[in-house]
Length: 269
Image (spheres, one colour):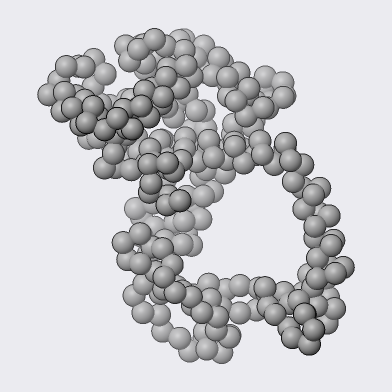
């Protein structure tokens, strides 16, 4: 499934869809021309309409409000916002099956936020390094880890469009980090993976190499200029990589490979 499809968990990030971040937000003007045009586009797509209603319900439940007027109240009342945070933390703890003390829930949410920031930092510094300035996280979002504060930022017109987009992006990645963390805890993946590694070291990897020993190589990949998907890849050795001049759309990735031996043939992995 494509990350750009309507079924993807990243569908809310599309800037040409119903959840696009616009230049301004006006919760107190529901009958403006801009809102009327947006509603017409939404009603024309039943799938998007259903998805919007589901997301709106989730947002209202998390913030414990009945409508967008309640969201506006949270933006201006710090006391209400704090109460909303406390209730939201309990809801999120149940959602991700976090069975810890109340003060530890915040620590867990901070972990999810750090993971979300790390994803963007990796893309900015590694995968999409030539476009790093466009991916840099704003200070306002980098220093915010509470889901309620991030969610309210999206509805706060005082913030620039890019900052509001980054807040939504961080929430989506935090949700993904929380789901992965929950899955790992439920499946006891750490101990299972340890047993799997022991099996590989005993029965699969080549006995000619020590445990943990690797053979270095490079992957020369070519990428589509529109969505950066990989269209072609080949393995090259160290000498060829040192003499190579990359063309537009090409990327060189260093990898370390192990070997396994079926019969008399070594196959790198």
